[in-house]
Amino acid sequence: MSDARLADLSRRLPDLRLLVAAADLEHYGRDWTRRWTPAPLAIALPASIDEVQAILCWANEHDVAIVPSGGRTGLSGGAVAANGEVVLSLQRMNRVLDFDAVDRTLTVQPGIALHTVHEAARSHGLIYPVDFAARGSCSIGGNIATNAGGIRVIRYGNTREWIVGLQVVTGSGELIELNRGLIKNSSGYDFRQLLIGSEGTLGIVVEATLKLTDPPPPSQVMLLALPDMDALMQVFALFRARLALQAFEFFTDRALEHVLAHGAQRAIEGDYPYYVVTEFDAADEPAQDAALAAFEHALERGWVSDGVIAQSEAQATALWRLREGITESLAPRRPYKNDVSVRISAVPAFLHEMQALLAHEYPQVEVVWFGHIGDGNLHINVLRPEELAEEAFIAQCEHVTKLLAATLQRHGGSISAEHGIGLVKRAYLESTRSAAEIALMRGVRKVFDPNGILNPGKLFADG
Ligand code: MLT
Ligand code: ZN
Image 1: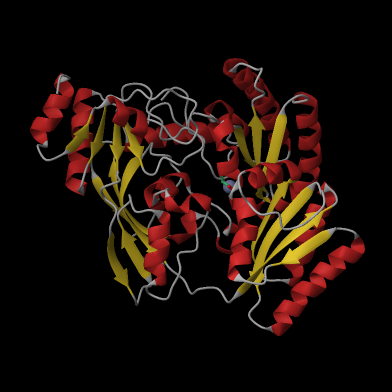
Image 2: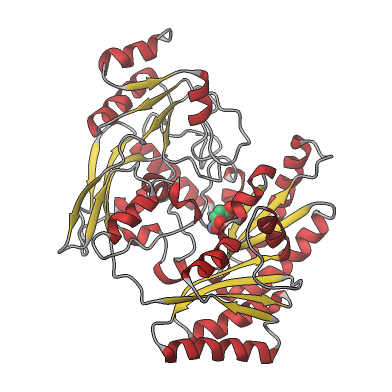
């Protein structure tokens, strides 16, 4: 080790896996944003809680910044290491530690992939219901750090609803056990909830106890084509009133074009501006009839132009691919992403204002919308025109984001619904959080991480 600090780390932890090869620094120093050039000092891959604690003690002594790292599927730069940090990858701590049939909980290490958690829950006849397209690559530790949402929030809520216990190593290297799997625990501040969504700025999750639940009844998946934007919330209100929704997702014709070009199968002929993929309980004939009746009602009102119900699991998967494949289909274009939310009741007014704003500000730029409209959460993906240089493009997007943030503020919304603030949105935090709140957030950070070594520059611009 040529770096004296790393040599000291290796001396303290001779068994610690430490990577410094250029390819590793590049691989572990970036996330799915692909905007920053990775430049970490080294990658540490601890295999135990003791090692994590020792790394943090070492980092405090040497004043080395630590970037906690899971699957690095984040879209806000929360796991980017571009300034000589040590990336602390939890990828080797990826085991299921315990299943408790009475408590119906699964205790896992943070580096376990979400889909492995799903499989483990299913092997006990239960489910862990948080789900989204990156399930194969993202880690539960990262999900906790961003309070990940996804496609089933409408039924099950975000990650924070499903975490009943955490073990966390704070910025100063202390191990704390939070909530211990309790359902009821009214004994003061709930640091577990504070840690969830803290984007690696307060502590490192080294163990998590997840609540599991019963699988939902058999469901059906429906794809709907809609004639205009107003119909979106009309159909949502109708379906939510009549059916037991598990998901209600939307995307535009532009999103469809990209996902079809990426290999998905067209399911509805003709061109329509908006589409919805919805999944709902359909265990028996009355439930299936209710879905059909809701569809026909929407058709009669002109809220829906066409639709298809999946007749098999394969067809259901194909319909879901039209929505879930969008991110991957856009990834080669490295889109600039906004991930915003408003209350469901504010969606119609916000959508109109936002559409006018985007049309005005991006006249020559392709903008792709999709998202979790049933949760009031929209993903806006802006694609750089080939002739526009990256820097100028980002500057334009930052300008529009400022305007968007002001619009959101007027509608009482959030600049980050589920992707986190990270590096991408830290300049807009004030649009969602008051000055008093931000001052408290900074104070909390100081308590958990007095030397500011955990993920500096994320969430707050100045550390
Ligand atoms: C999604 O809803 O597909 C994810 O949040 C990813 C994305 O927004 O690109
Ligand atoms: Zn999403």
